[in-house]
Image (cartoon, rainbow, N blue to C red; front, side, top):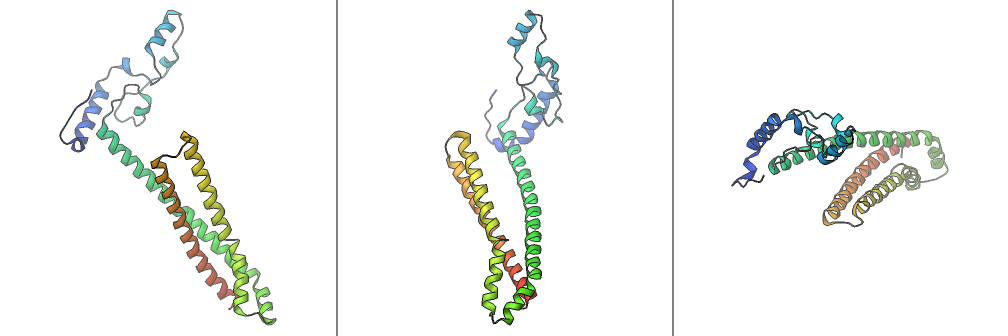
Amino acid sequence: MMSNVENPNKTYAFANKLKNGIIKRSSKDVAVIPAYNYYAKKLCVEKGENYFADKYVVELSPDNNQLYMNWKYYPSFRVLDRQNLLKNISVFIMLFIYISIVCFTAVWIISYTRSVTIAINNKTLFNDLKRLGANNKYIEKCIKVQLKKVFTIPTIVGSVGISLFFLLILYGNSGDISASEYTALQINLGVILLSSLFMYLVYKLSFRKVKKIVEI
């Protein structure tokens, strides 16, 4: 059934009530899974066999948040689908942001700690270099070589690896890259640039701390 209204975006509450009303008033005879086939059941009954889908019980309740996947006749309203899609996307984005914060915090702690460990373990070596006449620029160069293994290489390998993996997923879905998938690749590039900027800031902070430890 299709309906035409003047302001479809303002009909969410009505559509939600109508959907709940349909669910509550639906007979148990139609409480079947999406794979249910009445003709296939008829053939099974004629053969004296049990139809496999009869053992799956669908709970027809507005509170059943899995009903849209489990019920063959789940009522679909465009205004509900659109709003629920935005709500689900918002939840996923918030979850992604939360996980990102946790991961970036872990990266900051591990990278900073590793940098400080390098400085402490090699402090005697750097002092010996100063006694042998090495200037601060040379020692800074040596420090940067050590920190490169902590920051630059992992960032490059991780960025290239995840980009290739993401590209493989997009291409593997359809054998081609659509316009929306190109947009997704651009967003992925933006995330990589932000991540690289974060790693650079952690690198500068760690480099300053290392210089302070080795007293240059």
